[in-house]
Image: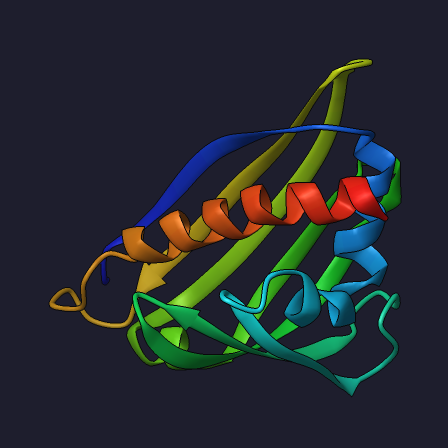
Amino acid sequence: MATSGTYVTEVPLKGSADKHYKRWRDENHLFPDAIGHHIQGVTVHDGEWDSHEAIKIWNYTCDGKPEVFKERKEIDDENMVITFRGLEGHVMEQLKVYDLIYQFSQKSPDDIVCKITMIWEKRTDDSPEPSNYMKFLKSVVADMDEHVLKA
């Protein structure tokens, strides 16, 4: 069995958790305009922008390289959790499992946190661990903060 793991980090945010959750849940099409240095395009392959189990294709830049990621979105409105399950794309060439879980929590009126959990399993032991992707995800969440506040 190939190596697997879980990375967890928290990103402090401003504003309301509801607003951040809505942007990540329903408004992925706004990401290229908001943070085009990270995300160059998001298209719906199957379903609707805001539907459970919608499949989307993301064009993004990680470590200076253009990449593509196809995922299926799972929604848990009660807990403000969105899960992107990796289906295809550059990262899936090295990983058998690549699940990204974003949970938005309002700790206090001025204290919001996005907890990012990445669950991964390599296809082979000689593939690198995906720590660069966790760094990328953390940067994407942090950079979206200002754009959510302006909305």
